[in-house]
Length: 152
Length: 152
DNA sequence: ATAATGTCTATCTAACTAGTAGGGATAAGC
DNA sequence: GCTTATCCCTACTAGTTAGATAGACATTAT
Image 1 (tube, rainbow over the protein chains, first blue to last red):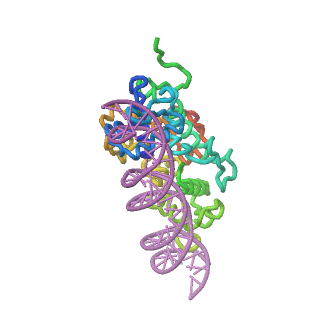
Image 2: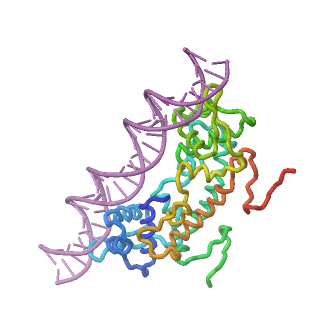
Image 3: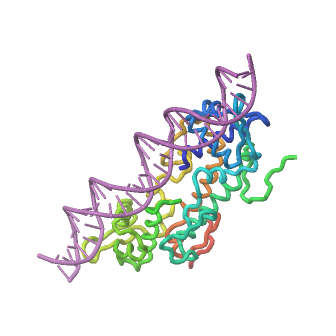
């Protein structure tokens, strides 16, 4: 299960990305419409800002806007921000690689091999699907890079 | 990341399943060869016994043996035993289904839709691959039910 | 009887989750 | 230039979980 924090982050991002271009959304407004504890949400939005995903305006008529376009932000990126490494084993993580203490051989470790397959499958979705895909309900094609449907 | 408990369980199961038919393996032996805290491992093996996966013999020359064949035990089954539901959201779990408190519509929830895809992909591996597959290094074919290679 | 095993229950510590709290900084509007 | 609405930052807390550790009991081969 993903944390509430991560789930709130997705709810907030989808709300902000749905706004008309340039229109800011306040943390209070998001908290109210999505039943998220306000002060908790503020922390989350702050994290998203520090990560370069959101931008903010302070003061009256302030709020949050997207800093990067929604179709450049993958579910995996956001999830990693709040959950840390998504790999099921430390020896499968690219960014947080760590060998298991008692590991004899990574090349022959059955656990690593099978979980590697599961992780690959999951990553193929999470690292390719973006907030934009989710908002537009873009169809999901199995092959990354293969354009299933193209507008225009 | 999966818990140490789950990882230890897999190590132990693979070790026990690798034994010649009917030969028991003691918790002390497994703990020693895999650098697992002995008393911690005992709890894990007990859980596996209660789940009907292992059988045990007590007393001198006791130990653990497989109760069910290794090729009938999926990674998903073992993982669920120690980690609980694998679904990333409560509304995606079959066994532990729970609606999100603030859910407006599951059918249109973007978060549910995208995580559902990731979960499907991961489950397709975890619920189809067995301890036997792992031990024999069986090739992994994408389509379930399609026999990639068949002995005999 | 003894020793080696599995079985059961309780306890402990550190970290993490999910918040709550209380300000301080900034900007708009009167 | 005061007020108010917003974001920004840090600290704190209660409850849960992870990862063991400990000790006694039950069973069985020798």
